[in-house]
Length: 125
Image (cartoon, rainbow, N blue to C red):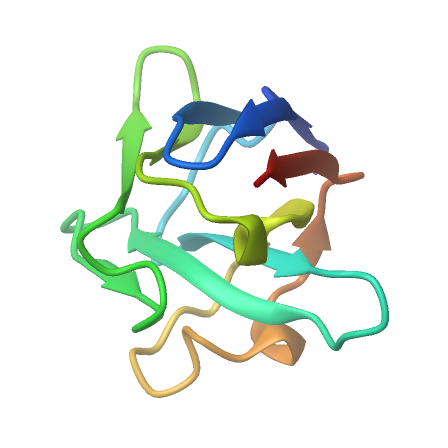
């Protein structure tokens, strides 16, 4: 399984970006797709996730109301629409796939089996 994240870049405080994660998976079953991020000097943290079976979404409190995760079945992609970006959102963003999805672990990085290479998001003040 391959995951390819794209869409990162430099944006000003309050701006918007749209990240996409293309996946080679063809049968998703009870999967979840998630986005995590890691800022310099900090641990990787959960951002958002979507369950493939019912499209239920999960968000970190820090991004709730600003970020929206969605999926495109036809293109096998998961998107992260980021609005109202803040300097503290600066990080490398990673998409990941959890092939044994449960709501109890959807926000935990070790539950995810496959990871993309990351895309850098920089928000200037």
